[in-house]
Each structure stands twice: as C-alpha cells, then as structure tokens.
Image 1 (cartoon, rainbow, N blue to C red):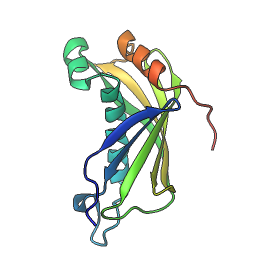
Image 2: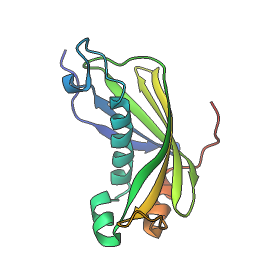
Image 3: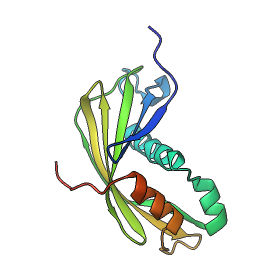
Image 4: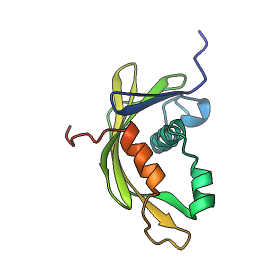
Length: 152
C-alpha cells in the first residue's frame, strides 16, 4: 500500500489540524522518527495554520520587518512514530497577547498520542526587539483558533 503523501490542513472546533507522512529523512537507522524532528513537524503545522488563515510569514516579514520566534517550548514524548506513518498535528491557542501567543500542539498517529507540546511564540523586529503582533494576524488567529483552557 502506498502512503498518502500530500499534507492536509483544516480548521475544526476552533483548532487547526494537519497531517504529514513520515519520510525516510525523518527517521533514524531503525526507521523511528528522530526526536528533534517532532519540533519540525510542530513548526510545519503552525506554518500551515497561518497559511490556511491567508497569512504569509515571508510577506509579513517583508512588510513589517517583524517575525515570529519561539521563546519557550515544553515537550513530552509519549510514543514513537515510524517510517510511512501519517502524523496528525492538532494546534490550539492557549493565549494571545500583544507581543506573544501560546499554543498547545498534540501529535498523533492513528489516534495514538506521540507527542504533546506547549510553545510560546513572540513577535520581534529585525533588531531583535519585541513588537506587537500585527492586528491582521492577531485578528485572524483569534477568529480561527479559540483560546482553550490549559490542562492535561
């Protein structure tokens, strides 16, 4: 059976969901996803969520000279993913403030919990100074992702 290769991305219940296949390059010699690659999957999912909202991070950077950076991440590894698995990433908003936002991301495969993480993201300018998240971006995020209660 050939795995589905194209990513999928959609919003439902105030959350963004997308999925990606696990490629050989994502794994170690045993065919298990290398631990640091879960952070890449989570980053891809956040990028896909913004794209689905009509936000281009490259255009935002070019127009505002500001961009997002990760300031904190807490990650819990629960179960491994393997070559050709399809990972689904669910992203929910925990908090949205003037300069930063917090998100929770759950990575699963066939309803099996792989990884849970919380990530804090801030907006900074070209000089590395915190700046307000552009109003259009904050509006889009708050319209697509409902703020969820924190808890496990």
